[in-house]
Image: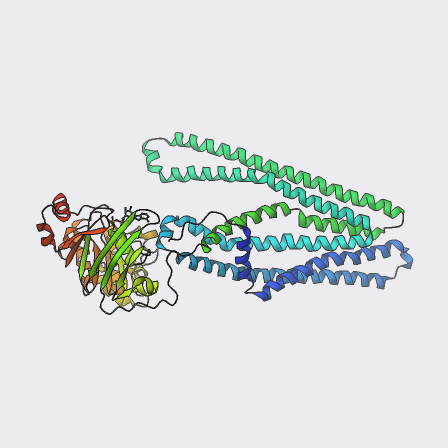
Length: 596
Ligand code: ADP
């Protein structure tokens, strides 16, 4: 029923599909990247052929017979070809920058939009930090993958093929020798990646351990200091950095070993080709210019394939990074609008739950065949022991989850058949512990009605009894409230959330009262604010405080996902031995039994 937590990894194929779909929206720059690159490789292959002819001309002619004009022409062609390569570089750079910037923005937007459309359950099953990282890496990995593909793989393939074809035409054996060497070199690099990978992984693990110990120590600083255990912690940290050092050295040694092998290989091919050249030269099959040509080609080739192994590893990493977000993109939404869903039309604000049942996945039913009708503008309190299903009822009405059977109706319309957007626009929800954006208080309150003027925001804040504390802050309404609103007290945060709901002015209000005790002044202010908020609305309160319950039109006692009793406060109290009576006497004048 729900969107499950995404798996950690996915194959590279869907990643490439998503990336290609995003990139082909920019066909011109995408094409120019390849044009630019082909110009560079072309210049690198053809240019040296003119240098070769130039040198051959010089080598085969006595100085006094040299025709300066024809030599300069050869040099001119050589310069022109290299200039084309230079232009290719510019085209490639400019177009790849534009392409990557555009596509990365699109990917970030795509990931953001797709992520936030996942269901409530998805977010409570996944860490916020992990999700944030996945969105970030998804767009960044595109840059890595495209860079590696173009600068490393495509360049090597084109240049390598070109050079080998040219050399084979000059001399079959030289060309074949280079081909064999290239294949060997690449295979060795691929094998090296295998050796290197576990060592790098170990190094990253040790690195994370050090970071973990460090951040644990920083967040426990006051405990460490009161237990006078700095040196003990230093010891723990010391052991971790030693293991990190060992892992780091092993990984570096492996790198050094790989470079050593590569270096030897490079030397062998260079000398080998030249040595082979000597025999061919002796037989008149090679010219002086050919020696230069081979040198330039080998250096160019080396330049491109030297880091191929490294690129391959970075490519794997980038695939893995992007794959994590793709797994989320491919996870179907837990709660979806039906095709052609209509917007909800609220005329009165009447709510009805009919034969409502619900269970989380395969677990036992949380709501059991419940029937409840709340008439327009009625104020109903849900009370009952913790885990009875009160919050679940409100979450079903908000369609955070889809019902298992039966239905919830607003003014006769089944909420599963209307758009989620219109449903939620008609309901103001004040949660138990409101979380605020790290934006100004003005913006936080305005969130209830995006086009509200400053005056309207302040009016709502006054009604919610938060205007006074806000204006007392040095920056007033412009105060930023810290991540999740941590800079405000619980009572203040709640009043800001109430102000937001007042501004939203939705016909239906769901209120989950805070369970934690507030000081009596805060409590008093909140009750004041709530009174204003509830005016003229259909209200469902998950009540923990008797002061709220007393003013409600009806109290519904929920137990085991079903209605155990309902009536006014005094009617319910009269039922000796009833659950409400029991709850009341346990809490006598304070709170209704509930922690959740
Ligand atoms: P109340 O609000 O009355 O305290 P809830 O509606 O929060 O109760 O919970 C009802 C039952 O559903 C509890 O047994 C709770 O453990 C279970 N529950 C709540 N949320 C989830 C969830 N996301 N997944 C599985 N079970 C859940």
